[in-house]
Image (tube, rainbow, N blue to C red; front, side):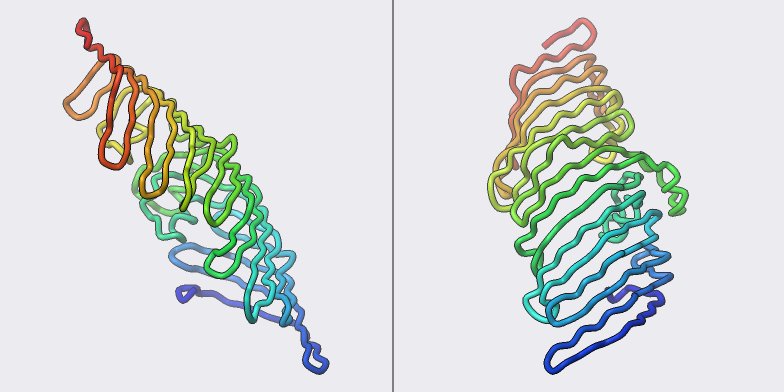
Length: 276
């Protein structure tokens, strides 16, 4: 928080008796900024004692959106346990990417939904649930005065979070004419098993991954294995496909990949009257 700037006002009362004490009041902040991200207003009621720090009726306006909820720290002076319960609306993805230091994220959208989580210091014993919606926000680029062209994105993320893994249920992202659907588990330490389905009417939407890729296509696959040794397998179909100086009218086949190799099998290529 060393880059945080703004104005904060704190008003309240403190009561104490013997070895016990408690302070309660209101916290208000305006004109907060950090890493080019601005929060116009932050307000909450607070209660602080050796047993608990509790921020309730949290109201925030900033990041081109708003948030409300509560934040609790059990045993704030030692052995801290955190609990957050928030509802967010129209938070800018570009604001979040700037805050996280991900300036090159090529999407513009607004984030809304609910997030509940508990954790210890350093993210230990993290557990939570998130139900988030992303809506297109083409005006976000102009709001940040960016000269680059960014893809509007929309989608839905339903996630069960833990320190070791994240499980996605009925989640999807769509940018331009490309839709990515996924369900399953991504694990940091154990085995992952994530089923993905991609359908694109314009592969140029993937220019941030393959700048010269054109055509349309679909892919159905599974990502498995550990973080250090991931594997992927599935099938693909593409039409009017071109990449750099290569071009085919139709391509389909199966694939299996790991960090070192990609194996293609049952591949069918058609170019005009030629077929392989």
